[in-house]
Each structure stands twice: as C-alpha cells, then as structure tokens.
Image (cartoon, rainbow, N blue to C red; front, side, top):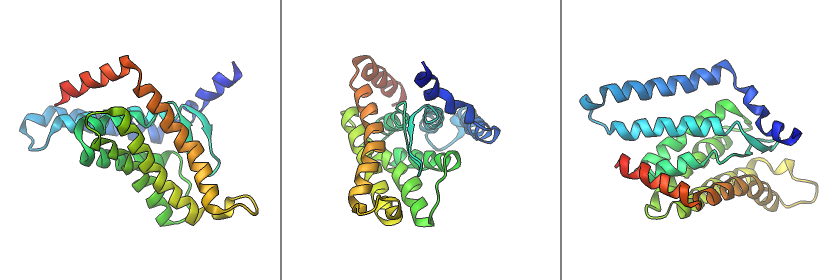
Length: 211
C-alpha cells in the first residue's frame, strides 16, 4: 500500500506555475478550436496536439521511479505523444515532442550545459515524433520513437554525465545502462499498453476521427 501511495505522491508536486502552463496550453487549444474555420492551418491537429501534450504532462507526474540526475519511469507518459505522431505524422509529432520537452524542462530540470539541455529535452523528446514514420503500426512507432529518445539521452550521458559513473566504469556502458533502465522501461510500458486490443481499437478510432 505504501508503494502504491508513493507512485502517486509526485502529483502533489504540481505547482501553481505548472498548472498555469497546462491551463495556458488548453486555453490556446480552445481558442484555436473556436477560430479554426477561419484559420489557414489544420486546427484539428493543433487541438489534438495540445490535448496529447497536456495528458502526457500529467501522466509524467505518476512516477514508478525517478533517477537522481533526471529521467523517470512513468505511467506511459510518452504514449500520448506516440499516438499523436502516429495520427498526424512525424513532422507534427516532432513539433509536439519539442513542446512537451520544454514542459519537461520546467517540470524536472537537470542542467549541466546548454548542449546537454538540447540533447535531453529538445532532441530527445522531439525524437518521440519519429513514431509517425510507422503509420501502419503504433507498436513499432513506440519502439522507434523510444529508441530515438534513448539515443539522444545516451549521447548526452556519454558526454556530460561521465563523472556520475561509478569508479572504473566505462561512461558508454554507464550511459547505456542508465538510459536503458529509465527510457527503455518507460518505452516498454508504452509498448505493452499499445499491444492491448482495446487500446489499439481506441487509437484507431481517434485516428479515423482526426483524419
């Protein structure tokens, strides 16, 4: 019971600032939905993107494990971003991933260097949009997007987090183990959920309604 409570206890860390950010995102989405018929862009893709980012952001607070140097194993917080990329394609997915990465930078910043921020928060989360290249299989998209994020964070780990490796441990191996444990497990959770028939059916319905 204590473990179950601890899984959800990070929800109490949601500050007024982060709540304001989420509300702002939803407000922008609502505004775009109202003016959609007069706009030149695809309003539906913006609306879905805002909602997916908001859901992913909230899920990221439900943590099974949090690595001290940043990164968490969550309740499939990346899945909404994979789904969005699967529905609207890689370009839209990468853009939404970058926006989500900026929210993660606000939520759980661990900053050592500007390039490290670029790798861990911009490129890594933007890479979730690679799932959009697998337009016929959401599960493969999850693996591709998760691997893209892993590679960006793996490179960051080798370059910027080598000093955190235990004495005598190769930084490459250290980064592979840490990111494999955190991002790999998070991706595996999303992958398993994406295999559930009811979930796949719901995603396909969303896709048919969005396109």
